[in-house]
Length: 206
Image: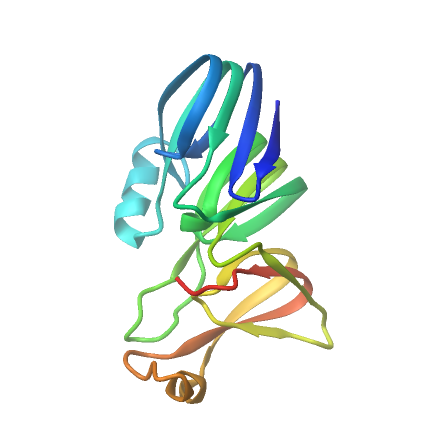
């Protein structure tokens, strides 16, 4: 089966006696003989996934769509982008993940401390294997930024969507840019990416 972009905010999943996993509640229409059931949380299987979700707050509620037909998926009017993974690992913010197909596994990994005051992003969702991943972005299509050893990349954590490649993530405390835009409350930090790969961001903050 394949995931295809129907419009900039809707994807279609073409099922032929097959199935996909998608964000719970993201089905907006379907044709044919398709059944829907809960697929639990992204980040592993069974009880372990549930424990990780409760412990980290980084959980993904999925549904499984199986059968023969076409399922249309969308979420809150956000733009959609489909990425192809070929035995690769994608680090992604769980709330930006719309659908997966193929031989893909999800997990939750420790991303490191971002400081004493902020718990956001201490864990990250990873998608590993071969298949398609449909991602959501607010404010417009995803923006793909190249990272090289000569040019590390620093991004706002609220704009970050996903990263792929031989990349290392670290955290940079930087109060000045928050202060300049009037967001001085809380603990300010940025995500820094070193290595070789691609980091994708959305043009609107969460």
